[in-house]
Image (cartoon, rainbow, N blue to C red; front, top):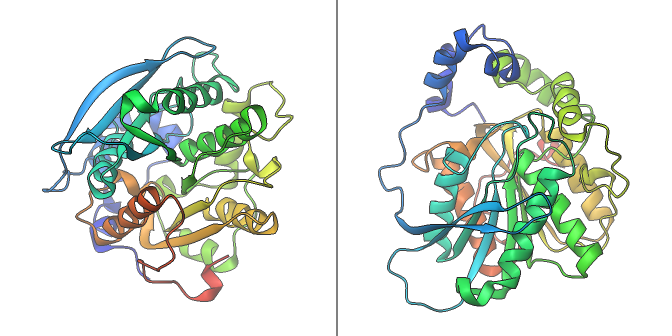
Length: 333
Protein backbone atom coordinates (compact mmCIF):
# COMPACT_ATOMS: atom_id res chain seq x y z
CA UNK A 1 0.00 0.00 0.00
CA UNK A 2 1.22 3.54 -0.71
CA UNK A 3 2.18 5.84 2.13
CA UNK A 4 -0.91 7.52 3.58
CA UNK A 5 -1.47 10.84 1.72
CA UNK A 6 -1.60 12.89 4.93
CA UNK A 7 1.84 11.59 5.85
CA UNK A 8 3.27 11.81 2.34
CA UNK A 9 2.22 15.46 2.05
CA UNK A 10 4.41 16.39 5.02
CA UNK A 11 7.64 14.75 3.87
CA UNK A 12 8.79 17.91 2.07
CA UNK A 13 9.19 19.51 5.52
CA UNK A 14 12.08 17.18 6.33
CA UNK A 15 13.58 16.60 2.89
CA UNK A 16 17.36 16.94 3.15
CA UNK A 17 17.51 16.66 6.94
CA UNK A 18 20.00 14.14 8.37
CA UNK A 19 18.95 11.35 10.71
CA UNK A 20 16.55 12.19 13.52
CA UNK A 21 19.33 11.88 16.10
CA UNK A 22 21.52 14.40 14.27
CA UNK A 23 18.59 16.74 13.79
CA UNK A 24 17.58 16.34 17.42
CA UNK A 25 20.99 17.65 18.46
CA UNK A 26 21.08 20.64 16.07
CA UNK A 27 19.07 23.69 17.24
CA UNK A 28 19.20 25.17 13.73
CA UNK A 29 17.16 22.26 12.39
CA UNK A 30 14.71 22.01 15.26
CA UNK A 31 12.05 24.29 13.76
CA UNK A 32 11.62 22.11 10.67
CA UNK A 33 11.50 19.02 12.83
CA UNK A 34 8.90 20.58 15.14
CA UNK A 35 6.76 21.59 12.17
CA UNK A 36 6.89 18.08 10.76
CA UNK A 37 6.02 16.54 14.12
CA UNK A 38 3.21 18.96 14.96
CA UNK A 39 -0.14 17.35 14.29
CA UNK A 40 -3.45 18.65 15.46
CA UNK A 41 -5.09 16.13 17.77
CA UNK A 42 -8.12 14.26 16.57
CA UNK A 43 -11.25 16.43 16.87
CA UNK A 44 -12.67 13.72 19.09
CA UNK A 45 -9.60 13.19 21.30
CA UNK A 46 -11.22 11.59 24.34
CA UNK A 47 -11.25 13.29 27.69
CA UNK A 48 -10.22 11.38 30.80
CA UNK A 49 -9.81 11.95 34.49
CA UNK A 50 -6.08 12.15 35.16
CA UNK A 51 -3.90 12.33 38.20
CA UNK A 52 -0.20 12.00 38.92
CA UNK A 53 1.37 9.50 41.28
CA UNK A 54 4.81 7.97 41.72
CA UNK A 55 5.95 4.39 42.08
CA UNK A 56 8.86 3.63 44.42
CA UNK A 57 11.87 2.33 42.53
CA UNK A 58 15.50 1.43 43.18
CA UNK A 59 16.68 4.69 41.59
CA UNK A 60 14.06 6.90 43.21
CA UNK A 61 10.37 7.59 42.60
CA UNK A 62 9.04 6.86 39.11
CA UNK A 63 6.38 9.40 38.02
CA UNK A 64 3.24 7.99 36.42
CA UNK A 65 0.07 9.56 35.06
CA UNK A 66 -3.18 7.67 35.61
CA UNK A 67 -6.05 7.95 33.13
CA UNK A 68 -9.57 6.88 34.06
CA UNK A 69 -12.75 7.05 31.95
CA UNK A 70 -14.31 10.45 32.60
CA UNK A 71 -17.83 9.36 33.56
CA UNK A 72 -17.39 5.71 34.36
CA UNK A 73 -18.82 4.03 37.46
CA UNK A 74 -16.28 2.91 40.00
CA UNK A 75 -15.62 -0.78 39.41
CA UNK A 76 -12.51 -2.84 38.70
CA UNK A 77 -11.44 -2.33 35.11
CA UNK A 78 -8.82 -3.72 32.77
CA UNK A 79 -5.64 -1.70 32.70
CA UNK A 80 -2.78 -0.83 30.40
CA UNK A 81 0.65 0.14 31.73
CA UNK A 82 1.98 2.18 28.81
CA UNK A 83 5.62 3.08 28.05
CA UNK A 84 6.38 5.81 25.48
CA UNK A 85 9.23 5.62 22.98
CA UNK A 86 11.90 8.07 21.88
CA UNK A 87 15.06 6.05 21.32
CA UNK A 88 15.59 5.92 25.11
CA UNK A 89 16.74 9.57 25.00
CA UNK A 90 13.54 11.58 24.48
CA UNK A 91 9.82 11.58 25.22
CA UNK A 92 7.73 12.26 28.30
CA UNK A 93 4.18 11.97 29.60
CA UNK A 94 3.02 14.85 27.39
CA UNK A 95 4.35 13.47 24.12
CA UNK A 96 1.68 12.43 21.62
CA UNK A 97 2.61 8.77 21.80
CA UNK A 98 2.16 8.85 25.57
CA UNK A 99 -0.83 11.14 26.10
CA UNK A 100 -2.88 10.59 22.92
CA UNK A 101 -2.49 6.82 23.08
CA UNK A 102 -3.41 6.74 26.76
CA UNK A 103 -6.57 8.79 26.19
CA UNK A 104 -7.65 6.74 23.21
CA UNK A 105 -7.16 3.38 24.92
CA UNK A 106 -8.77 4.63 28.13
CA UNK A 107 -11.94 5.51 26.20
CA UNK A 108 -12.00 2.66 23.69
CA UNK A 109 -11.27 -0.09 26.20
CA UNK A 110 -13.10 1.52 29.15
CA UNK A 111 -9.83 0.90 30.96
CA UNK A 112 -7.42 2.50 33.37
CA UNK A 113 -4.18 3.52 31.66
CA UNK A 114 -0.99 4.18 33.62
CA UNK A 115 1.64 6.03 31.59
CA UNK A 116 5.23 5.69 32.86
CA UNK A 117 7.76 8.54 32.94
CA UNK A 118 10.91 6.44 33.15
CA UNK A 119 14.38 7.97 33.37
CA UNK A 120 15.90 8.62 29.95
CA UNK A 121 19.33 7.36 28.88
CA UNK A 122 20.95 10.80 29.03
CA UNK A 123 23.52 12.45 31.31
CA UNK A 124 25.18 9.15 32.14
CA UNK A 125 21.99 7.16 32.73
CA UNK A 126 22.10 3.71 31.08
CA UNK A 127 20.59 0.26 31.46
CA UNK A 128 19.36 -0.98 33.87
CA UNK A 129 17.95 2.33 35.15
CA UNK A 130 15.12 2.85 32.59
CA UNK A 131 14.37 -0.88 32.73
CA UNK A 132 14.22 -0.84 36.54
CA UNK A 133 11.86 2.14 36.44
CA UNK A 134 9.39 0.30 34.21
CA UNK A 135 9.59 -2.87 36.31
CA UNK A 136 8.90 -0.77 39.43
CA UNK A 137 5.92 0.93 37.78
CA UNK A 138 4.34 -2.38 36.70
CA UNK A 139 4.82 -3.84 40.18
CA UNK A 140 3.28 -0.73 41.75
CA UNK A 141 0.22 -0.96 39.51
CA UNK A 142 -0.15 -4.65 40.27
CA UNK A 143 0.26 -4.16 44.03
CA UNK A 144 -2.10 -1.17 44.16
CA UNK A 145 -4.74 -2.49 41.81
CA UNK A 146 -7.54 -2.27 44.37
CA UNK A 147 -6.84 1.41 45.08
CA UNK A 148 -6.51 2.17 41.37
CA UNK A 149 -9.78 0.44 40.49
CA UNK A 150 -8.02 -2.19 38.40
CA UNK A 151 -8.82 -5.86 37.97
CA UNK A 152 -5.44 -7.44 38.86
CA UNK A 153 -6.05 -10.30 36.45
CA UNK A 154 -6.56 -7.97 33.48
CA UNK A 155 -3.38 -5.88 33.40
CA UNK A 156 -1.71 -5.43 30.00
CA UNK A 157 1.79 -3.98 29.63
CA UNK A 158 2.79 -2.23 26.42
CA UNK A 159 4.82 0.44 24.73
CA UNK A 160 6.02 1.95 21.48
CA UNK A 161 9.49 1.67 19.91
CA UNK A 162 12.08 1.91 22.73
CA UNK A 163 9.11 1.83 25.11
CA UNK A 164 8.08 -1.51 23.61
CA UNK A 165 11.59 -2.77 24.30
CA UNK A 166 11.29 -1.62 27.92
CA UNK A 167 7.83 -3.17 28.26
CA UNK A 168 9.00 -6.55 26.98
CA UNK A 169 12.14 -6.49 29.10
CA UNK A 170 10.10 -5.65 32.19
CA UNK A 171 7.70 -8.53 31.56
CA UNK A 172 10.60 -10.98 31.17
CA UNK A 173 12.07 -9.71 34.45
CA UNK A 174 8.73 -10.01 36.27
CA UNK A 175 8.34 -13.56 34.97
CA UNK A 176 11.76 -14.52 36.32
CA UNK A 177 11.83 -12.57 39.59
CA UNK A 178 8.20 -12.75 40.69
CA UNK A 179 6.80 -15.70 38.76
CA UNK A 180 3.99 -13.42 37.65
CA UNK A 181 3.04 -12.18 34.21
CA UNK A 182 0.57 -9.57 33.01
CA UNK A 183 -2.42 -10.82 31.07
CA UNK A 184 -1.03 -9.55 27.76
CA UNK A 185 1.88 -7.68 26.20
CA UNK A 186 1.48 -5.05 23.46
CA UNK A 187 4.51 -4.06 21.39
CA UNK A 188 4.18 -1.27 18.81
CA UNK A 189 7.01 -0.98 16.23
CA UNK A 190 9.56 -2.34 18.74
CA UNK A 191 13.36 -2.43 18.70
CA UNK A 192 14.38 -5.77 20.16
CA UNK A 193 17.92 -6.25 18.83
CA UNK A 194 21.17 -4.40 19.52
CA UNK A 195 22.00 -4.92 15.84
CA UNK A 196 19.20 -4.60 13.30
CA UNK A 197 18.51 -7.82 11.35
CA UNK A 198 18.71 -7.58 7.58
CA UNK A 199 15.75 -5.97 5.81
CA UNK A 200 13.88 -7.87 3.14
CA UNK A 201 14.67 -6.61 -0.39
CA UNK A 202 11.08 -5.34 -0.76
CA UNK A 203 11.21 -3.34 2.48
CA UNK A 204 14.68 -1.97 1.71
CA UNK A 205 13.50 -0.80 -1.72
CA UNK A 206 10.39 0.90 -0.29
CA UNK A 207 12.35 2.71 2.42
CA UNK A 208 15.08 3.87 0.04
CA UNK A 209 12.57 6.25 -1.58
CA UNK A 210 11.87 8.07 1.69
CA UNK A 211 13.76 11.00 3.27
CA UNK A 212 16.68 10.00 5.46
CA UNK A 213 14.95 11.59 8.45
CA UNK A 214 12.23 8.91 8.60
CA UNK A 215 14.47 5.94 7.85
CA UNK A 216 15.90 3.95 10.75
CA UNK A 217 19.06 2.31 9.48
CA UNK A 218 21.29 -0.36 10.99
CA UNK A 219 23.82 2.27 12.08
CA UNK A 220 21.09 4.22 13.87
CA UNK A 221 20.14 1.15 15.88
CA UNK A 222 23.77 0.54 16.86
CA UNK A 223 24.07 4.07 18.24
CA UNK A 224 20.69 3.99 20.00
CA UNK A 225 21.27 0.70 21.72
CA UNK A 226 24.83 1.63 22.70
CA UNK A 227 23.49 4.73 24.45
CA UNK A 228 20.98 2.60 26.34
CA UNK A 229 23.23 -0.35 27.18
CA UNK A 230 26.31 1.61 28.23
CA UNK A 231 28.85 -0.79 29.69
CA UNK A 232 26.35 -2.91 31.58
CA UNK A 233 26.11 -6.53 30.43
CA UNK A 234 22.68 -7.82 29.43
CA UNK A 235 23.05 -11.28 30.90
CA UNK A 236 19.34 -12.14 30.86
CA UNK A 237 18.17 -10.42 27.70
CA UNK A 238 16.12 -7.89 29.64
CA UNK A 239 17.69 -4.96 27.80
CA UNK A 240 17.46 -6.62 24.39
CA UNK A 241 14.56 -9.09 24.61
CA UNK A 242 15.55 -10.79 21.36
CA UNK A 243 18.44 -12.26 23.38
CA UNK A 244 16.18 -13.40 26.21
CA UNK A 245 14.44 -16.69 26.95
CA UNK A 246 10.88 -16.20 25.69
CA UNK A 247 9.32 -19.45 26.91
CA UNK A 248 6.19 -18.94 28.96
CA UNK A 249 5.69 -15.31 27.93
CA UNK A 250 2.13 -14.00 28.06
CA UNK A 251 0.00 -13.53 24.91
CA UNK A 252 1.52 -10.79 22.77
CA UNK A 253 0.30 -8.30 20.19
CA UNK A 254 2.86 -6.91 17.75
CA UNK A 255 1.88 -3.79 15.77
CA UNK A 256 4.30 -2.87 12.99
CA UNK A 257 4.40 0.06 10.58
CA UNK A 258 4.54 -0.87 6.91
CA UNK A 259 7.29 1.69 6.19
CA UNK A 260 9.70 1.06 9.07
CA UNK A 261 13.20 -0.37 9.15
CA UNK A 262 12.50 -1.67 12.64
CA UNK A 263 10.07 -4.13 11.10
CA UNK A 264 13.12 -6.34 10.60
CA UNK A 265 13.62 -6.48 14.36
CA UNK A 266 9.93 -6.97 15.07
CA UNK A 267 9.51 -9.72 12.48
CA UNK A 268 12.54 -11.61 13.78
CA UNK A 269 11.18 -11.25 17.31
CA UNK A 270 7.78 -12.52 16.15
CA UNK A 271 9.44 -15.63 14.71
CA UNK A 272 11.23 -16.20 18.02
CA UNK A 273 7.97 -15.83 19.95
CA UNK A 274 6.27 -18.39 17.73
CA UNK A 275 9.18 -20.79 18.09
CA UNK A 276 8.82 -20.48 21.87
CA UNK A 277 5.10 -21.22 21.73
CA UNK A 278 3.98 -17.75 22.79
CA UNK A 279 0.43 -16.86 21.68
CA UNK A 280 0.95 -14.08 19.14
CA UNK A 281 -1.06 -11.70 16.97
CA UNK A 282 1.16 -9.84 14.49
CA UNK A 283 -0.35 -6.97 12.49
CA UNK A 284 1.37 -4.70 9.99
CA UNK A 285 -0.40 -1.34 9.82
CA UNK A 286 -0.50 -0.21 6.17
CA UNK A 287 0.55 3.17 4.82
CA UNK A 288 2.32 4.46 7.95
CA UNK A 289 5.82 5.16 9.21
CA UNK A 290 7.54 4.27 12.46
CA UNK A 291 5.91 6.01 15.42
CA UNK A 292 2.39 6.15 14.00
CA UNK A 293 0.85 6.25 17.50
CA UNK A 294 2.11 9.84 17.66
CA UNK A 295 -0.40 10.70 14.90
CA UNK A 296 -4.07 11.58 15.41
CA UNK A 297 -6.72 8.88 15.37
CA UNK A 298 -8.45 10.76 12.54
CA UNK A 299 -6.00 8.94 10.22
CA UNK A 300 -7.76 5.70 9.38
CA UNK A 301 -4.79 3.32 9.82
CA UNK A 302 -4.04 4.84 13.24
CA UNK A 303 -7.69 4.55 14.25
CA UNK A 304 -7.74 0.88 13.30
CA UNK A 305 -4.48 0.18 15.09
CA UNK A 306 -5.86 1.79 18.24
CA UNK A 307 -8.94 -0.41 17.91
CA UNK A 308 -6.74 -3.54 17.85
CA UNK A 309 -4.75 -2.27 20.82
CA UNK A 310 -7.87 -1.43 22.83
CA UNK A 311 -9.51 -4.78 22.05
CA UNK A 312 -6.42 -6.55 23.33
CA UNK A 313 -6.58 -4.55 26.58
CA UNK A 314 -10.30 -5.31 26.93
CA UNK A 315 -10.03 -9.03 26.25
CA UNK A 316 -6.47 -9.40 27.65
CA UNK A 317 -5.46 -11.48 24.66
CA UNK A 318 -4.47 -10.64 21.09
CA UNK A 319 -7.63 -10.13 19.05
CA UNK A 320 -8.69 -13.05 16.86
CA UNK A 321 -10.34 -11.06 14.08
CA UNK A 322 -8.36 -9.01 11.58
CA UNK A 323 -9.25 -5.33 11.90
CA UNK A 324 -6.61 -4.01 9.52
CA UNK A 325 -6.23 -4.87 5.85
CA UNK A 326 -3.56 -7.49 5.51
CA UNK A 327 -0.49 -6.96 3.37
CA UNK A 328 0.60 -9.53 0.79
CA UNK A 329 2.18 -12.56 2.39
CA UNK A 330 5.73 -11.58 1.42
CA UNK A 331 5.42 -8.51 3.70
CA UNK A 332 4.51 -10.51 6.79
CA UNK A 333 6.60 -12.68 9.00
